[in-house]
Length: 186
Image 1 (cartoon, one colour):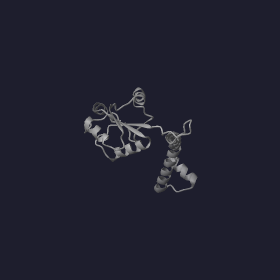
Image 2 (image 1 turned 30 degrees about the vertical axis):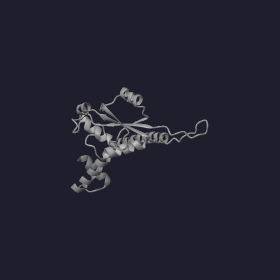
Image 3 (image 1 turned 135 degrees about the vertical axis):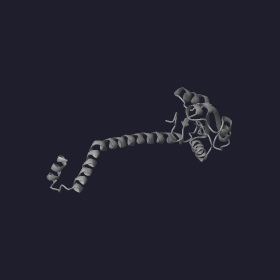
Image 4 (image 1 turned 90 degrees about the horizontal axis):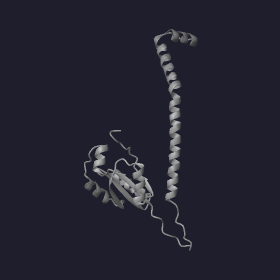
């Protein structure tokens, strides 16, 4: 407390306990801000940059999806190109969020292909699903926004599998909901 007393003398304040406590709290807050404030500012700046990049990517995709139809060499307007969207998931215990995801996915294109994760891959990565493959397929197929269903999609897809999906199902975009992918509880 001698340093604090010297500091209080320098400030010309009393040395009672209340004043010492207030000064200690203020100094603690100031030192915390000096030591850690820049870290939070840098983190906010980094997140802002990442958000800007994501917004640019989203704008690019939205523009690409809205490309106007172009007339052919005879001046006739040709039919819009089919835009195939692929979405995958477990879709266990179908709910409004799933249906809304299908609706939004379908709104991004002209054809929605939905891949359903296999029971085995869901069990391996999360826990056994409550509904089996057939029940989950029936629920997804019954949605009016879904045009095609693909079964036995692995829960964790690698680059090779994604390339295979693009080629096999002739999709233009693969989308996923904003829910976090949890594997082994992480």
